[in-house]
Image: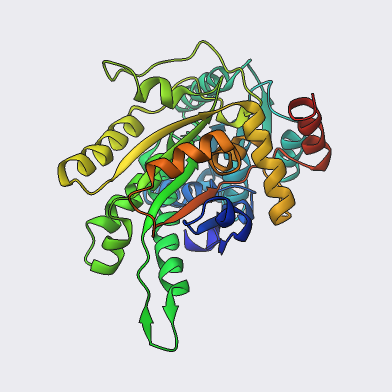
Length: 376
């Protein structure tokens, strides 16, 4: 799957480092993946794996080439559909159907169709679209057809693909900390990783990557992630992770609906695995007294839009509000003060933002969000 997603740049942000002094801030630019978001990582791993399984099942059991084709059916608020379509069109004999909810931006629907996906618009939210996707797969299996359901976030294969972002971040930080004069790598430690949360797939991958490197054979890589705080970022009206993570009995909370500009975060409930992994990471920090933690941050729509607008000004790149939620803890005075307080005992550590991207944005949309939320 390595040829189906990109190793994206990790850049130092001077503007954000000034705001977050004394912590250097680095941006992992997954918005530069081919589809426009980090989701290429997980989809590449998932699609290549199911293709191998399909090929194995059809070997010496196929009458003609047409029967060897396979179809993946996905539900998506847009970005997962774009990722699976971008990946699948580079895999021989793989077709794609994507079902999106009515809240999906026309811009994204047009992109999906231009990439060759069969697109169906159904339901008021992602859950309704997902139910139809699952029904189609079940119907195809009953009729003897070959179809595979592809969740936008709830599959361990996706999480393992997403976990590569942590491997890259660690490698890139070590490379950038190398001093040619002394031939030594300067001490570097990740204090916090900030990432947006919708259904929990990206967060599952980040926690998997942190845990793999923490327990890995490289002492240098392990030391870099010891004490890392993973900051789960959402918007009000789409905060399904916060509702479950903070629930008294640890149960999964299902929101009544999504009421946020960040429609790409629009899963009314998260995968149970993300709560389990988050609590395991937090518990490890408490047991070892190392500082490892998972922290839930919920920003307003205005703060998410502020993140998008300021990021475009500082770094000349566009992201949608779902990604702006992970930038809000740095650009919002309210949230930044909270984050810096939580990192006060680890002043030499760096902050890394997973700039997850999103294709539901252009200059006109960004201008409209700015007018609606920041210029009232």
